[in-house]
Amino acid sequence: MLTLAETDAGEAALPGGRADTLAETPFQTARREAMEEIGLPEIDQSLPHPFAVEHLCELPANLAKTEVVVRPCVALLHSYDAATGENADPEVSLIPKLDAREVAAVFTAPFHSFLCMKQEEQDSEDWYQGSWSRWHNSNWRMHQFFVRANDALVKPRGSPEQNVTSDETRHRVFGMTARIVVDAARLAYAQEPEFEHNSHWGDEAMIANLRRMGRLSETRRPSDELTRETMEKAAKLS
Image (cartoon, rainbow, N blue to C red; front, side, top):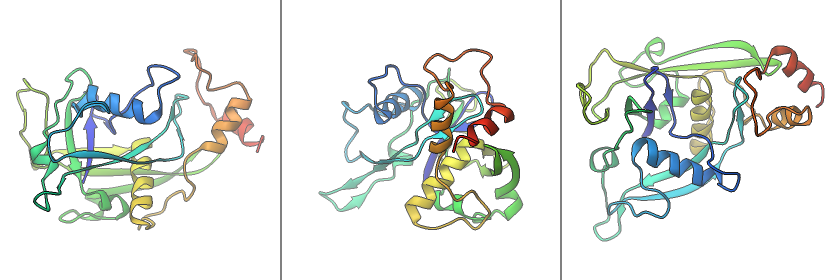
């Protein structure tokens, strides 16, 4: 299962955020942000038995139009009990503690479904929609997934709808979040999606070219935005 958070703006995202210092590693940032947003204990804190977090890898960096570079960190939350040889259910036994200032809800979806045109009990239009657009000076596949609310939906304490689901509720996973999830699923299952997609991983080459142009600096100006002209100029540096 894949766990995602939904903001008050209704956008689905993976737990994460900016590094506090230049010395903070991506994994340290990811764990700290997961603690702040959904209550997952930090690296130096223990999880309730029998849960453990295993850091697996980092994916190539992705570039947002807002000039934010995102480094996806992949980890496995597992619940194998060596004493009994049984697995606990993390969705039931490890309930997230949400920061209501940042997270409106946490929900789950079958991870493998993000490689499929349709999910069990959902037809293709209810689950996946995709289209090609122009971005990074090339054709770009934009993914949208519509995840039905399920029994694992959790809302912040004090919410009038805490732990309440509706059959009509859909969580839209799109944009950079959708791309990162698809790429992580490609890697995890060694399988390509059933739908069309960009085959390359991340935006490392474009990021390097933009840095050569003096963009993506530590201090971002309010006027900074990656326009089509900027991306075309960066693409010519390759």
